[in-house]
Structures are given as C-alpha cells and as structure tokens.
Image (cartoon, rainbow, N blue to C red; front, side, top):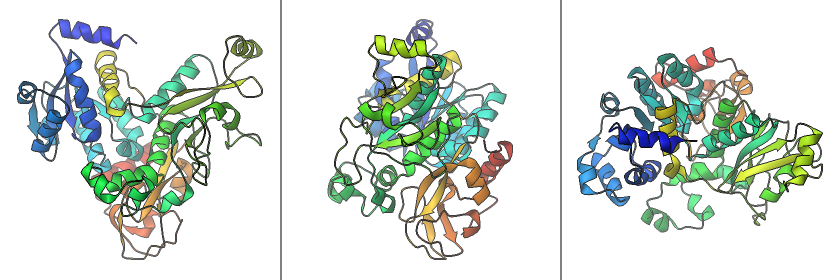
Length: 435
C-alpha cells in the first residue's frame, strides 16, 4: 500500500498530515491512542460538546500533557473545520444531521472528510460524495469500521477478476432482539445496568448494535459504495460459521441468498441461542467465484477452501479494530487522494420499523431507542413506500397509529420539512434515482 512510506516523506519534510477530530467518544478515543506512535500524523484540533471531556479522553489513551497542551480543544465544530492548517476532518459524532452539516462545511472549506458517522452516510452519502468530488476533496468511509473493510474485500476480489457473490459481516442475532429497548438491552449482553454504567456504556448505542439497526445501516453503506444490493426482505442473518460461508452464502435451493451480488450479515448464534461453530461475530467476509475452469483448478492446487462444487470460496477477516485502524483512511485521503470506500449510488436504505404497537402522538426516539428499529431494504422499495429513514426518526411525533412490525412512512409523522438534514436527504433522493 505504501502509505507508511509516503507518510515518512511528509514527516521528514516537516509537513505532517494535520487532522481535526469531531467527537472524542469511543471511536475517536481509539483513533487518538494511535497518534503518538504515528510520526507524520498530528491531531491539531478536537471539537467536542465538552472540551474538558475530550482532554480527559486524550489523557486516558496515553497522551502526554505536552501533546494535550499543543492541541486546540473547542466546542464549535464549524470553527474548528475552518482552521487553515487542517487537511483532513474526521466526523465521529454518530449523529446523522450533525454529520451531514459537518461534512458539507468541511467540503466547503476544502478539507478531506472521513465519515466515521455511517448514520449520516446512509442518510445522504451519495450526494455528499458527489459534492466532495466536485470540490476536489475526498469523502471517505472510515477504515477500521466494518463497511470500509468489506468494501476493501470486495475491491480485492473484483480487482483479481473474481465475481462477487456476497459480502458482509458477522454479528450476534436472534429475532427477539428487534424488540429490545435501552431498558432491556443489558440482559442480552449478560451485564447488569450497574456494570454497564461503570463501563461508561451507552444503552441506546449498544441497543442499536443488538436490535438489527446498526447491521442494516452498515450493509446499506456497503451496498451504496460497492454496487452490491440488499435482498427484497432485508437481512436474513443466517447462522453461518467461517467454514460454511462458501457453501451457504449462495443463491438457490442450496444457499440462503436471494441473489448473487448481495449484502448479508451472518449470525454467531443459532435461533435457539446456541453458538455457531467458527463464528464470525466481529469479522467481515466476501464470497467469490472462480471465473473459469483453470482458476477453479488453481483453487484446488493451492489448497483454497471451497464449496462442494470447487468453484466458490470465501475470504474473511476475523475481527476489526475500529478506531485503531482509522489512520488508513486519513492517510489514504491526504497522501493518495483516495477514499477507503464511498457511496456511488443509492441502492440500500434503512427504514424505521415499529418495535411495538405505536400510538398517534408518541414521539420517536431514534436509532437504538424503544420505538423503532432500522430495517434494510432496497432503496427503490423505500422510495416507493415513502419510508422514514432511521436517521430522521428522532424527536418526531406520530400522527397516526402504527402496528408492530410495519415500516413507518413520512406520512405517519409530523416532520419539519425546513430542517436542513431533511432537505438534503430529499435532494439526495432527487439526484440519485434508486439503482
């Protein structure tokens, strides 16, 4: 990849890659922990709602007081983005409307933007990527998070000439998790509320990991960046181990896929809760096919694990390191002007779906909350339905009852149509007819 060699040149020339970080939470902190051991990379400024909390996060990950003193800490992200010394802005708030605003401001200021905020990317990523390209800057998914790592595997397979049958990630899934709320979530993790609080764990965030929303968001991001597409009914979450990927993740009677070229998430447990052998709970995968008989014979000669036909195989990575790997995106944008994944079209969407019977007048509480979970669906189906994107489902009131399991539409809620995030999303829909 040569990123480190290019970075060494910048360091030797006294011209480090200077970064501004928005949001010093868990992901941001993991990134910050790697900065002292990456010569040539500097975090010049950190914007957080609580600058003191951000300073403490830096101490907690091992920054010296001298490094902290040399860094600007502010509570105004827009002012930070405008700093002339910054080359790359990292958006790590997890708040979709804020992420869109920050990304657009960074693009306007001529800064590359690394979008840790996959919620914002799924809400309007295709238009953000187009806007960045027109401005001559890079808009990128965040390496270390699973969508970018999946896109890398897909790119590897296609660059080698292998047709891609499926790609995705692992998680722990049971159907009852769709009804989980921030009040019930810790039992599913084997924790007490007290233990979770001691660990600084946010119940709504962890609930979004459990109830299927985060998986849907991440697979929509992969679809929009890679050209793969969701199944009509969304994610199936088949219980599949790494030794079974090639056999089970294929279309037809012998497999679990609706079609070739699909995004999917595999479960680390069976429906009864028993563990899957060789599970991929923390990892990512791509399933690919030999394009001809000669390549198939090479698979056999070099010990490639395949399905029963000998033609289909899978490559997987057993874990991801989240913010510890983010440097790859930052350096790729700054040194090679290349994204580690970015939306090229509108193929997958995540629609708010009722967790229980909801009543008119109730106010939705967004991703990971008690009211809705985010269901992956083809973008064309979402547009036809008029589905309410999960990124716009926070603090909006229902105007009619919605039964358990039904997707919520824009007509079901009272929404501020003058809101900037809403308007930008609608502009994205107009600019990118669903693939």
